Length: 253
Image 1 (tube, rainbow, N blue to C red):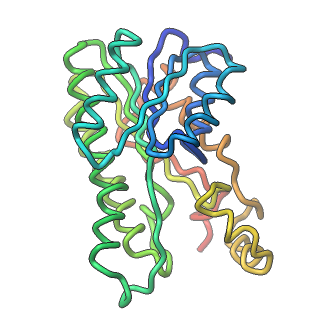
Image 2: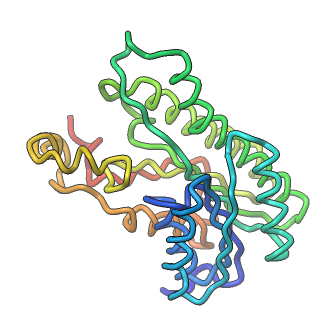
């Protein structure tokens, strides 16, 4: 069923690479107008180059999701260029690995600032715009299977993603009266710049994939297709949900 997002306008944060880029391109493929936001301007330019094949409008914007003024400027530009905002995909995120006893406060706060506080800001600024428009909307957050279960040496990341999962549910409750759905994606181990180094370690990745029934790493496009569902009218009665995209990983005891 092609062109699920024709006539829709979207912002995708983290659009310079990985899952964010794949989501931006998938939205374009389905006919949406998209503003890709990121701090990585070189990566945004590469996304823009790849976007040309789809023909739908694609804009880029430098945006630090931890700064409310940046997010407000991003939403204002999307509305100025596209006339409205229908979809906010808050995908930008970081991961830092530390044994729990070695975590430094600065690292803890940095992960929380991007992964949790940044999502909160994006959601709230987008929601205010959608409420003002008065015709509903879609908000999609980036959680993780790590927001549903723990994993070693990732306490800051796990905590931030768990917070995103509950933020998603809380925002969904409050925004339902405005016909705004709020859901999050909870990917498993996906091939992105954050995981490239680990995937290149053949012994490590083979051992890790024993936890995954599909016995392979996921691809960003497989997450992006789920984002299209959450952004489209097919999910109009789905809200407060964490959509797991993990090849069955958390089904394993």
